[in-house]
Length: 124
Image 1 (cartoon, rainbow, N blue to C red):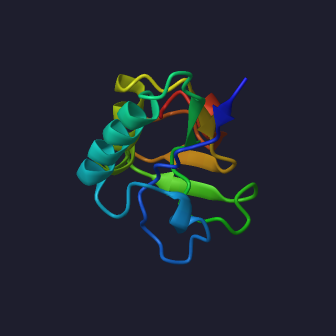
Image 2: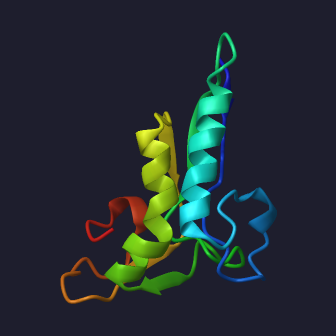
């Protein structure tokens, strides 16, 4: 009956994102992935660990008007910058992933979903 809406693992790309203090990744995708692995392992060392929900699925770089903006990003940036911490969370056994509120538009040649919410976007 216990849960944790976190950890937040988005990469800190913009200083004006009002929730950077909640995110573990900092500015380095590799370091963020290592930190999330350690966090998930440590959280499971208690007798009855809480359900953990990693957030906010990709990309969630600006807090202001997050439900009305569109993040435009190419596929290489998704894989090299945004995915590592989330992949580490999945590999570490996180219980669920919370979606971001913004629309995402992938711009590389293989993307074709257009502007779509992150969890409904087949490109990401």
